[in-house]
Length: 336
Image 1 (cartoon, helix red, strand yellow):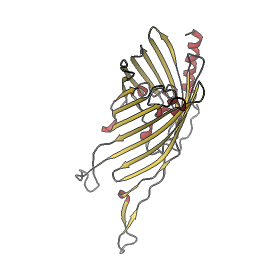
Image 2: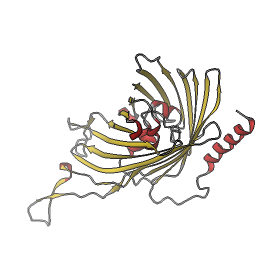
Image 3: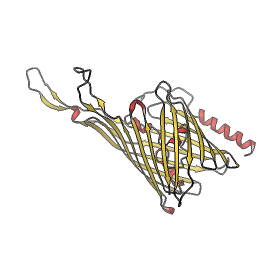
Image 4: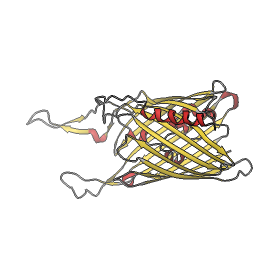
């Protein structure tokens, strides 16, 4: 790469880190979203790169990061992602995509977060009632993406989102939109944006909200149903750039930078990099700016030689959550 191109790229990525508004804005919606599991990234590769994946978006997990990137996938893919998440919860993700040629690419994904069994306690029985309950989150998505021009792809996702807390639940439908543009400079630098979780509000309902109401002293109790507020799901805007800064003798070095703005939090900046050898062995790292915890991530990947046009990849990510326990992510991808 020419020296001036490398300097231009460095400036561009640094600008991405400071391009969000410099003025402090009074937060009025902090902590006002429901279904916050939608903020948990998908795919060990993307997570290891600090979640700077909006522009890169070149595997089945792109349905989470940027549906526009799905149009760049040439092979059919299936990815399974599993993790022991925080506080003994379990996180599962299954993504699959099919290339339809000139008609584009379609994909489907399921993301599931489970608390496992939790002992029930009450004010009257703080040591436990002997009963167990559970909480879970579910998102089912369908994505369509296609190439608009040789350098531009766009896509849309329709998703069903639900949360279950013991015998009460809430659900809604939302949209994701996004695109990726591949430039003719800086080693075909990629520029991507996505807007996730458009629309959709959730209100809990269920038998746990059924109560006995006493209108006035001396009256009989009457059945009643508590009503909760409507809550927005987290609206996320991502803008990212990514490019290869070095390619030589089988080695490739890719860097990426994302700015993410959330409706219920301040902007965040994600930086990531990947070093690949012969497109078979990969080392990755990432760093997040303006986050409370989970600032640093590391990982690696191994791609096995294809057998009868079927490829298998294994990816691992380690996330340091600071004062919280560290998280390990594992993804297995099949390309066919």
